[in-house]
Length: 148
Image 1 (spheres, rainbow, N blue to C red):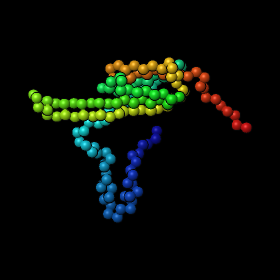
Image 2 (tube, helix red, strand yellow):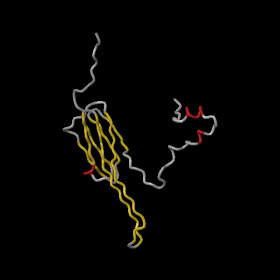
Image 3 (cartoon, rainbow, N blue to C red):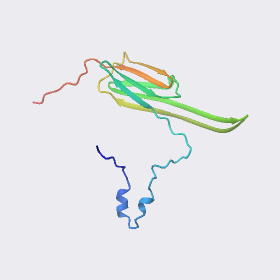
Image 4 (spheres, rainbow, N blue to C red):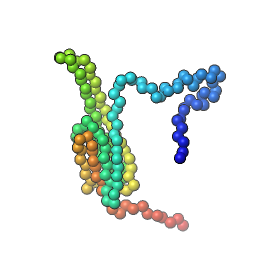
């Protein structure tokens, strides 16, 4: 099993540092959150399964209306995007104590091993989970070409 090492972009600079404390100046800079308490941007989690006839994609996109979800297929390239709108408001009586809004877009693109038949593809969105069934296009097998 391979060992995974964290990339340190300032590693070369620390060798040239005559004072020996330069590495502590930027240590953890990338890892610290810039905005403490800010709501992180939503992410789209995907599961892609395959059988002999089709690909099935399940994407978790909670809190999105189905009208705001877009799926595009170009050969074997699949792109899923959704517009996320989230608003929270805390009130005490008639006075607003805290209010937050997030508007943005999440998207994922990936390629499949075979091309997709767009005419018979289908998708449904239920309880925050998008399920798309993408049938494989017939006759798109990879062919070996002999070199002469």
